[in-house]
Amino acid sequence: MNDRKKVIKAELETAHRELVDLARSLDAEALALPTGSGLWNVQELITHLATFLPRHLRDSQLMSRGEKIPDERRDEVHQNNVELVKQRHGRSLDETLVELDENKTSIVAFLETVPDSDLDRMGEASDGQAISVAQSFQRVAQHYQAHCADIAKAVTSHRDNR
Ligand code: NI
Image 1: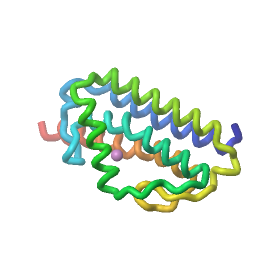
Image 2: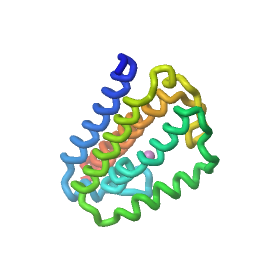
Image 3: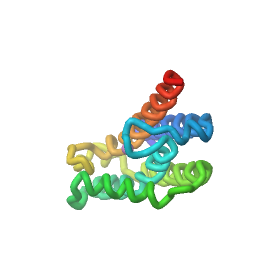
Image 4: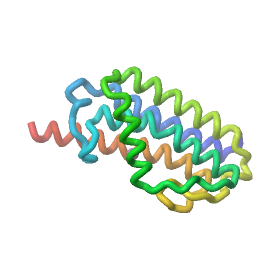
């Protein structure tokens, strides 16, 4: 792996580890807290992070081959995310973290196969933004980080309101 891919891989691994550490630090009460999304509680938000990746991986793979991602409106992506979380209702955190880990392993394995020359290939993300293949990997780490911040906020505001 070249240096650039090593940096992207390290970002993914770090964001993933931070998410797992945060998830493991939460008790049942914290896992049940509502989040700012208004839709999911903390545990469901972690489930969302464990389930969005196969679709994202598919999109990144198409992008790396210079193929267009099939047109899907943003609310369909959202609906799909909602459905994936719903299907896993009642599942334990441990099971969710196993799925999260499997997905992270697949995306890192895919990163290792992407030729360096394809990292700057441009494509369209599911929200319509023009992004490069490298950015599509970075978005995974950013997605973990954004929702970790949502979780931290939910936990903090609950503590402050007690
Ligand atoms: Ni999200």
